[in-house]
Length: 184
Image (cartoon, rainbow, N blue to C red; front, side, top):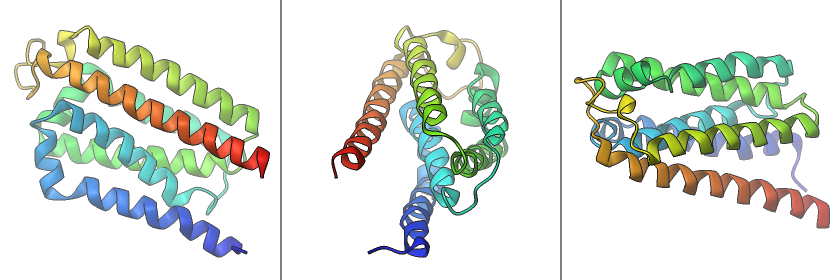
């Protein structure tokens, strides 16, 4: 039987490992070369921050609002490209995603299941729309709109595919976890 302290560490340790892996200087350097890796880092930093504090601290569900604001801000074309191109902005981007994930993890502790499910559906809907923007090779996220951007339109298809893979993995995990709790 796992006690509450061990349960909290089962989330904290993977969160810490994810953060370390995606904050390594090598990984950070590769993010300027591969748009798909930059987007993967967004997911992983958020998930890492989420896991660090999930069920460790339980706070107001309203903390999801600043969390969503931070995530949305860094996906606006100008700020996305600034973070991709310049180290100072990427540090702010990375810290924002970790904080956003941590806020979501704190908020999740007091959320009702229906709200969690609704937010997951909203996230997957917005993420699907955003991946379609990449699939259509929108120049706003490339060096066409922002000459300082390290990314070309050709990279956007790979980014869209990665987003679909990550979203599918998250959905499979959530459904698997739900079925496991329902059946066992």
